[in-house]
Length: 114
Length: 114
Image (cartoon, rainbow over all chains, first blue to last red; front, top):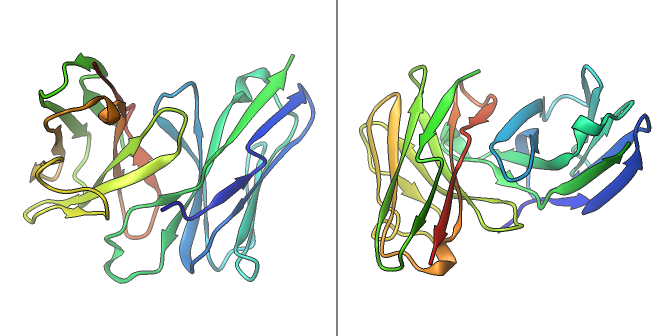
């Protein structure tokens, strides 16, 4: 079953504006990862944030993690048309041995209007 | 990171037949995973494939339907057996390069069953 829920499910903004997507999850995690997917293609890894981190930056991306609320947010600043894509959060659980894969949220479809 | 290729990139198959999907990684990795993405949906983990041992399947997925091979540290195959239209999905191979680190995805195989 899905671990996370993304909010909103769809987001449409003007180019140059900031886009914020939220992700909630249910169980304890080792880390949380954000991905981008363009038009049903493969997933591009954006950023990983570990359970002992609260904020992480990469270029125009800013990710926060609140383990007490079991939630994360992805902020894309100064959005561009090329940012149009689906964005997924995925959690890596705390079960032992490192054998588990990721549990994905439902995704946010982001549309950047030129 | 890791460079992952999948073959075929897409296929259209008749119901009742089987398709084997290949996943090749440019470096040796311990952990490989197979995911399914049904149309308009998020990703669901099918199984974890470790070299030298049998694959571990998630709830709802069975070896008879999705047999997996992992002959070495750079290659794996997933077979979708006795296909039905409900198997129409994107199938993605993924690897974890170190410990509880980033997980990278191949470009996916888009399967349509008629």
